[in-house]
Image (tube, rainbow, N blue to C red; front, side):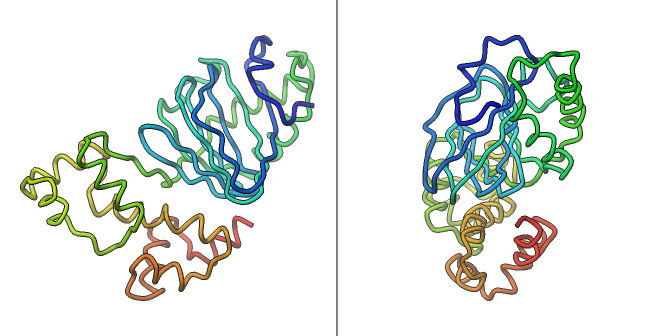
Amino acid sequence: MVRNNRVEVFDGIARPIIALGNDFPDGYTLLPHQHRRSQLLYAASGAIIVGTVQGSWVVPPHRGIWIPGGVAHSVQMLGAVSTRSLYLEPGAIPHMPPLCQVVSISPFMRNLMQESVDLPVDYDLDSRAGALMTLIQHEMQQLQSLPLALIMPAHDKLSRLAQAFLQNPTPHAVIDDWAASLGISRRSFTRLFRAETGLSFAAWRQQACLFAALPRLIAGEPVTAIAIDLGYDNPAAFTAMFKRSLGLSPRNYLKQNG
């Protein structure tokens, strides 16, 4: 059983996967750190926000995030959080993403991860435990990416605008105002913004509003209050944005995710 410990304690054990479970109180933050192994971090309860220099990712309950080895990241807990993590040797699973991604965790994969943290860390490769870990390696290749990333621009002035926007996100922000703040044309701004974030300004703006809303929804705040605070004309407009992004209304999304 490997719980409430650090992967570095076991990193020298020659196994392709090490499973670890940890429990954290509400508001706890793991300061920026990195692991030699890649990590699949799953929020069995509560929600987390993972941050890197490239951006931030909201991980709701019953979802996970893939963090490639060597990527420095922080983790902020939203509510009391129980995590399950798989730490993989480099190359243990081919063709995994080179960047952080929020991923769906199927009920079957949840059960596998729950079982894995109760196995000895030095499990016999030819035993049931070894077979379970091999099955996990196959299942990890079926993980589906979810649109819960907010990539931040590296460009200095644009980054400051983006950081300020996150403090008070609104669906009514317009390109012309941002372009004027940078002293460039609308066309130049559009090219710069997409080059820095991989998204159009409108898509990034929507993602930022979703990013701001999810932790509040998970904490139980009313949809109407969140919609008004974010500047939506009415709760229906906010719900429509949410459904376009995640395929479910806020109410149904919370039901599905416990």
